[in-house]
Length: 308
Image (tube, rainbow, N blue to C red):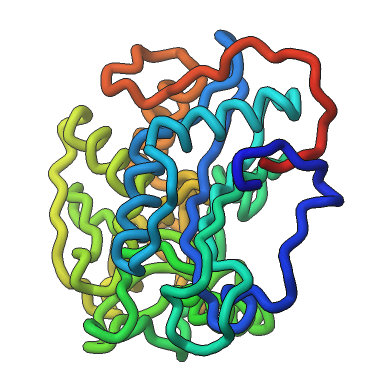
């Protein structure tokens, strides 16, 4: 935290911090994978670039360069001696004058790491998940910036997720303010329609996902046509395949929407091919042509369970 390694139980902030009262933080979700060549962070530079972009939108000067943030992330992983983990760099406004105006409150930066398994369950990667269309829509354009990964946006996500879980589903899909498909509570969405990969455009209030971008890149390599276009809700029921993408969800098939079976009700061939290509890179079975993996320097003596 603020440039120093801090034990997990000592990582605290003041109750008067602006972030607690007004949600003024931006963050990233990053995965470090265990590979035969050692721990590797997936698309570290892209995640850090998005963190700085989110901070710019909200007038937050992080006080560090992207290279320094990358170094802090790698150091925190190394200090915790983790072969694989989830990484959460978060910039937030600390204790200052209470009031909506944020710029008089200091910006603080922290990095936390922890062991986190498959977000929607290991079996979901093969069997798929059952989801619903949420009654909650994504924010309309020019209300909250969907391109920023900010804490405030995830209040909307919480409502979507809670409604889905209470309804007996694994996840919810939100529509945008015009009624077109947007994304899951914390994942981007892809449909396979007659062999083509279709995903909602950024104007449908979707976060520009790093895994989303990776899927599009891999699809092009596999010769799969990709379109970014508005999707009507009913396409969720008619698509041959659907899947979520995200740092936590990775590439997770969707087997039903609103209790209507999607395709054959299991992971489809296009989803399987993209999963294979994705995990081949992550697990070093394929060449890392795009420089997506950043390997963590040799682990050295430090206590586990900390934050920076």
